[in-house]
Amino acid sequence: MLENIKLRELYIGDTDGNMEAQAEDFTELFFDVDGKYNELLNDNNKFFIIGDKGTGKTYLANYICKKKTRKQHYEIQDAKKYWIVELVDKGEKESEHSKYLLCKWFLLEMIAKYIIHKVHPIKARYFKPSPQYKLKNYMDKLENLDFFRDQVLSSEVSELSEVGLNGTLNNADRVSSFGGTYKSSSGQNTKTESKRKDVYEHLNPFEELIKNSIGCKDDVILIFDDLDELDKKLVEKPTTDDMILNLIKCVHDINYEFIRNEKKFRIILLLRRDIIEKLQKYDANLNKRVTSNGIDLYWMISDKTSPENHPLMKMIIHKARTTCKKLSGCNDKEIYNKLFPENINNKTPLQYLLDLSFGRPRDFIMYLNHVIKRFPENGCFNASAMKSISALYSSDLFNELNNQLLFHREPEFSEDCIRLLRGIRKSTFSYLDAKMYFEKNNSEFHNISNLNDCLEFLYANGVIGNTWINKKNNNKRYFYWAYRRDASQTVNFKKDFVVHPGLKKKILD
Image (cartoon, rainbow, N blue to C red; front, side):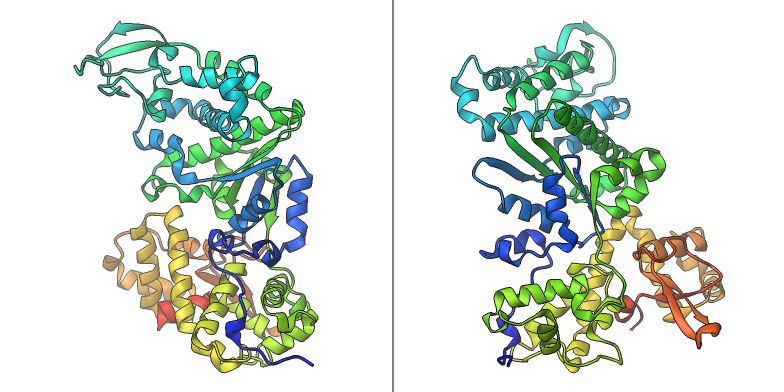
């Protein structure tokens, strides 16, 4: 017989994978959907973790690092520290035609620093015959601007990079010095031009030193967290997309070079699916790369499975069992029936949560944590408690959505699109409804030049879906949501539109 429990006794996770990774029992709490961890660790050809925002990419990356042995060097790198971004932000002309080389240099420098500081710090400092010592010596030379120049010629050219009064360079300036101008150490604004050496003269020996410095017993994985964490101001610059695309290419090429040389070294990128889809039109080979070399985090299997067997519900059950000893001897069905005893609005608790979410772990955790916080003495997630926090959840989901929209379009456009929905004031509406309201109030939407563009944007990001009634099937209503793989990814203007149920209270109420 199941013992009585209180919701406060449960821990079902955190919406932030980095925060959850701080828990002492994180490795026990971890829930692996479809064996993705083993797939990634056992296949050296996998170096992209792909998924929508909130599907567990950072969560999986943290688990990989937590499970490492003392002899393994697995670490997550912070995207916000990419000095390549500084270069783009400065508008360097060199970056416009050398993005791939700049990205490769960035990656090689990052790898080299990790080898000499984390993997082989003793050899790099004290063992002069060692390749690690040679690599450190090479890295020390990089601090000298003259390393990149054959000669200096006086010229009246536009200034690209500057050396400060102490004559030192930061990373972005150093790469810019492949060609360009600098300020003299005397402090005068003397414009000069460096006669550039071919970048390959530096990249090739640098790469060879790195390969020689990785031993046959070394086991290294460096994980780059989501690239959408780059400064928001860079999102609007077209060069940012190019840099992300070239980082993907470079990671692919560098990893295959390590595989070819039988080195157990990998760089892994965490990539949002919507970003990948946005970049497809710029590179015909991108889809082939990410499909062949990536693992895909997707949780929305058929809704017809038994509720306790759905991956998202299995995740909640696993974490509840792990953190509450009273549930330790119970099977999944028993725990599901204990925690979710009632239907909600004539739907199973699973279907209720799926309808209000984007089918991501983050959504389920966010919703249920609100219930736990508000009703800690409850013995289950009953219907009244679940329904009472829907408005609070809707506000959180809307804030999450805004972060996603910022990556794709300017905030003024997104705000106008949401205001359009609020103006229509219908949870289900036709294209004609939208057109009539837009044309009548056109002067209020300065950032929407085309209604179709607005509706396509809202559909692609899951704010609205398509809906229709099938009269041949007992007038059953159907829905298409772009975030579901079994739905059309293209909006249908002939069908009605519906505002996402999880966002409806925030947008329409």
